[in-house]
Length: 263
Image (cartoon, rainbow, N blue to C red; front, side, top):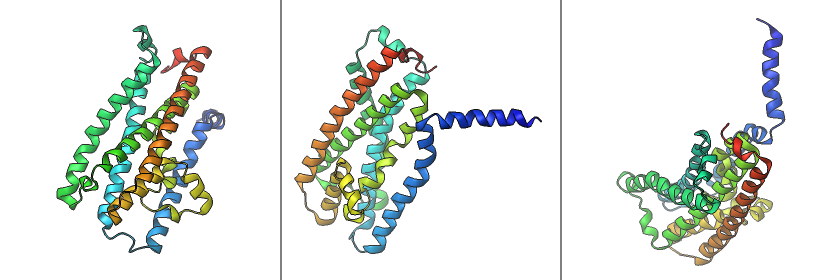
């Protein structure tokens, strides 16, 4: 065994990490996000153990809504990654196919994938735990719509990063949503966050979505201001993500990195 060979191999990977911000981020965010998220959850239940009159119903409903958001984002990313892994992305433009057609196709297919995964879980909630999301009424559709818009927005931003940074950005496809989970206030109200974090959280549509969910489930009150605020923010971010995707695509094509996608 030669020490210098092992050292050279280790040094190679260390240089890869040092020269790649996405790789460094991948090493840091998991333990940090887990501590922050579960720290706020623990703090909430410690201070307000009697906050929910139906803890299982509220927690499960929020979990299903969050999973819908997660699956919608991951489904979009997976469809794009599969084109890259199969080295088929550049072949799409032989058709030829336009960028907007790619976005529409991925968005609609991602919705189908998401529904296939989430519908069985919603159906099983009632017989197993006596919880039904449909008790939330017509507002449930608007909440799902808002969550899907945000999931697609994250998907577009992640794919933009893949076009810009290449395979090194791939880990972000799996973790982008977890970075926002503590600020999304999925399982606890926004008042649990420190004041400076509340300012940042209010810039996310997730806060209004899950605040509205708790309002319906706990107080039986529908506050359409939260729904309108969430939809407005989602439309703003969605349009912005489309612009970022176009800029990343044209930048990759101009630099010639587009033809190397998947290599």
